[in-house]
Image (tube, rainbow, N blue to C red; front, top):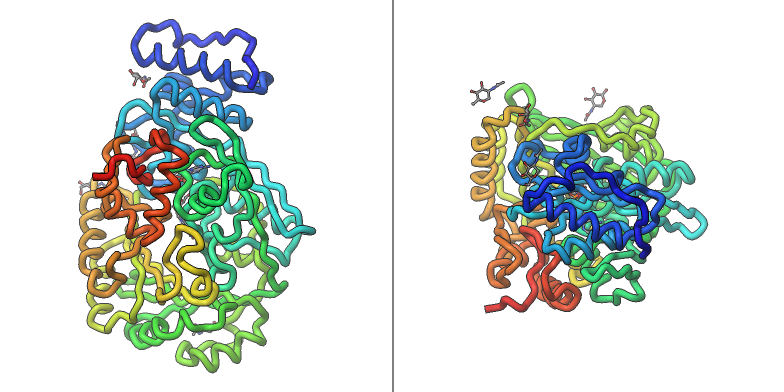
Length: 519
Ligand SMILES: Cc1cc2nc3c(=O)[nH]c(=O)nc-3n(C[C@H](O)[C@H](O)[C@H](O)COP(=O)(O)OP(=O)(O)OC[C@H]3O[C@@H](n4cnc5c(N)ncnc54)[C@H](O)[C@@H]3O)c2cc1C
Ligand SMILES: *[C@@H]1O[C@H](CO)[C@@H](O)[C@H](O)[C@H]1NC(C)=O
Ligand SMILES: *[C@@H]1O[C@H](CO)[C@@H](O)[C@H](O)[C@H]1NC(C)=O
Ligand SMILES: *[C@@H]1O[C@H](CO)[C@@H](O)[C@H](O)[C@H]1NC(C)=O
Ligand SMILES: *[C@@H]1O[C@H](CO)[C@@H](O)[C@H](O)[C@H]1NC(C)=O
């Protein structure tokens, strides 16, 4: 790490308030630790008084609930180089500042850019987004500031018969997504995004850069589903691509209760997880014209000719005709599940529009089919709440073949589907009403979902499950939500955490505790 030689004319350094003094000493520290020197520090470190501070901070805030909070970082650091990340970690630690790391900013509770404690900085990885796809070895190196959409686009640029099994939303960042598990339409065939990580580069609390070899298998295990934020700053992933057929097939069927939605759903929940692993058939439940509407949406890894006989034997009740199926390649299927017409130029996947919604979500896992009265109650709740919907994702296939100890993500065999409850709204004054609704639905569903622990998906982060109130994270309290996200892997995550970050520098409101505060 070199010394930054040029003088930095930063006007705000002249003021004498404590926070200014802190900012100044951080910048001095940062300059002395970071290289290369070709990038002026004014392009890397932004105080709240810099003109671009707000736009930089807001550009990756996906949930308007967290736009106008009083919790603002002292400054934003936007590294262009790995040494900038190292410098940010070393100097934040030296100056007693907390660090929040942001990749795509999709965290459901805003933990990548908010903090319940006042003095923190945000390390936004937006400039570290290079992607290098190598079709020969079927691997890719992806820096953690990149989005899923960019990654998918770069794969398709080189090959239409390769892909990567991760989430459907193109603006999600690979930093949070892959370190939290990451599932999408390919996961019944290929597992989670985290299952496809073959190496990673991470900056630890001492500012050292490590790869799989130097970090060791325990830490490498932890960051593939345990969340990155508890352990360090992940700089990049090395990922294994999957090969896919040139022709994939989708269909989309919508049904109301009058059109037999209940019977179809009853069948769906009994068979979807047992279907051929080439077939992903999920259901979304929402409201259209004051009635419940179920969408059965499928992706099949093969041509129409192969899917027709499969549907005719497994699920003839859906009543599909040849004209209801559409063939396409993988990148078109990405466009389809992202809500774009499939003829849209895939460059659209490189865009990152600002968010315009408030939302709150929760998750559950289902291990036995839900009885009809339970479903009716659930659908009535969806019906009574504007902006609410559910996404039900079938498990099984490859997900059942991978041991729940293989990565920290434990929700594998035994789950028939996952539920995401979602409500979104546009009027910020009505947040309380919507939050109450989703909490009520969650309470209602308890008898019908996984128990001891009631499972939850880390990437659908939910602070209602519990939170840390500061750096002195209490093990017993963290265990309550820790078991929901990780089941028995929680203990192993605590052991890794205690070893790699004993001082708990990398903490947040739902980070893994060290065992030091065990009562
Ligand atoms: C619209 C939308 C659609 C979604 N669709 C899916 C889906 O299809 N499948 C699915 O599995 N999930 C989905 N998610 C959830 C998504 O996977 C998580 O929100 C994920 O954590 C987002 O990652 P991010 O990098 O965008 O978020 P961020 O807010 O940047 O980060 C999330 C967490 O990871 C930490 N983190 C981020 N980068 C790093 C890093 N480089 N090193 C260490 N820690 C880091 C952050 O500090 C924070 O704690 C969706 C979310 C949204 C909002
Ligand atoms: C910047 O942050 C400091 C410390 O929190 C605060 O005193 C100051 O008012 C802020 N300035 C702006 C422009 O928000
Ligand atoms: C945030 O605050 C600004 C300025 O007060 C206001 O114009 C905007 O509507 C607010 N946005 C949200 C989502 O609350
Ligand atoms: C199949 O397509 C036809 C023609 O578009 C449509 O009328 C019918 O409703 C579709 N069937 C299903 C099950 O969606
Ligand atoms: C937002 O909600 C509040 C409280 O319910 C209401 O008074 C207000 O009219 C709403 N604003 C808009 C633009 O609908």
